[in-house]
Structure formats: structure tokens, C-alpha cells
Amino acid sequence: MKRMGLGISGALCLAAGSIGIGNAQALSPNTSPTIMYTAGPINIDETTPTVGTPSLTHKYILWRSNETISATAADTLSGVVGGECYVDTDPGQGNGQAMQYADGNLTATTVLGQGLGFGKHTLYVRSQDKAGNWSTPASYGFYVL
Figure 1 (cartoon, rainbow, N blue to C red):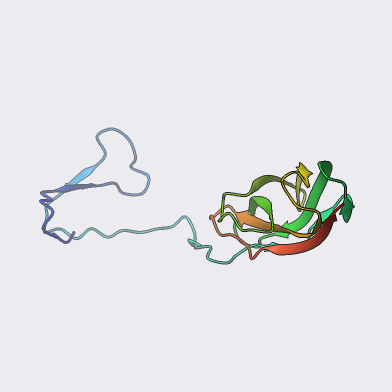
Figure 2 (spheres, one colour):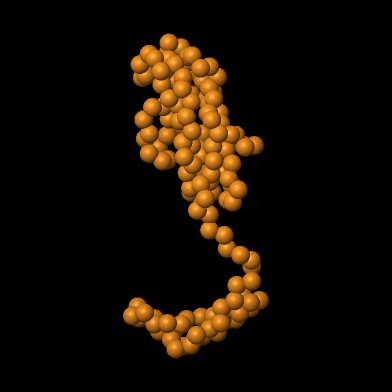
């Protein structure tokens, strides 16, 4: 063990299979224990998940229309945990409307059009994996009538 000026005066070391009360071996600050890791490889997930083109129940919606939003999502390493959607302006990752994830699909039901002007708008959807990575948002144009 390397002293790094942190006032470390000793440590304990457990050998494989020796976990239990009274099975630790005291180490002095100048001892370098052999540490073995045998549980398998550690994968660090820095890969972003993917999200497909979102869809709405209707492309032309009436003001204050109840709409279902859906999009496919996938992640090959840690798996998708959920996602979010927003209209026109990105509120920042984790600040959109939450979407549920099941069987490869993100879904949410929301009232669209309220607070939006009439005309064309853009819906964005992004997914998040279990490691906390966010996908690039996918978009879908719709109209409020």
C-alpha cells in the first residue's frame, strides 16, 4: 500500500474465501498486498443508447389533445432504463417529460398543444441507459390546429 500523505497507518486485507469476522489480516503501511480480481471483466459503458424516430397518435393535433408518444430505444451494453420527451426547446438532459421503457419502446401519454401556438412544432425524444448515458435526441414534426 502506498502512503499518500493522508495519515494512513494501516489496512486490512481479506483473502478470497476468508470473508467473516476475525478473518482479516492487518497490513503495515509498508506492505504491498497482492490483490486478485476473479469475478470477471469490468465493462465501463461510455456508449450512448439509440432512439428511433418518435411518433404521435396524430400528426395534426387539436389544441390540448391527449396524445401518446412512442419511440424505439436500444442499448447494447448496460440496457435502456427510460427516456424523456420535449417540444421545440431542449430543457436539458433529465428535465423533459419522463417516458416509460418496456419491450424496446419508450412511451408517454401527454396533453400536447397547451401552451403552444398554432402551427408546426417539433417533438424530441431521447433515451437513457443504466450507466447514465443519454442518446442524441430524435425528432418528429407535428402541427397544432
